[in-house]
Length: 181
Image (cartoon, one colour):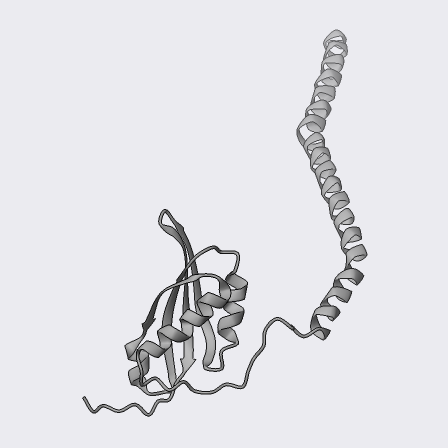
């Protein structure tokens, strides 16, 4: 009986050693890998924080410059209403804008519903054809017009038959229109 006790003791030691090894393999090693991944992420975040701390003063200075320097490109003239008794006048007004910007006026489409509301605003879809490069000049020239309240929408399209720029523009107009037709 003493012999069987001595023989089971080495087997128990081996089983315990295998259990400890399995525990290390199944629990400790995956956690060790996770900890290394967290350490790597922390190092990346520390680098990003250091970079942002370096750039923060420069960013602040740039923001201050933008706040202090008013735009010299956009001129906002005193707004006045446009007397729309002549339908061809809108086309001639936007034709001059197109020539200034170096694009071709394709069409001026007024929104009749907006005109009928009588609130002093008229929405007009203006379509230009030409290169995209003078788009800023075109927008600046339109905004400089005293009867333009704002540009509501800008659509730019490049198709087989050319490059198109469509602007929805809100105009201030004389709302005292007559219905004597």
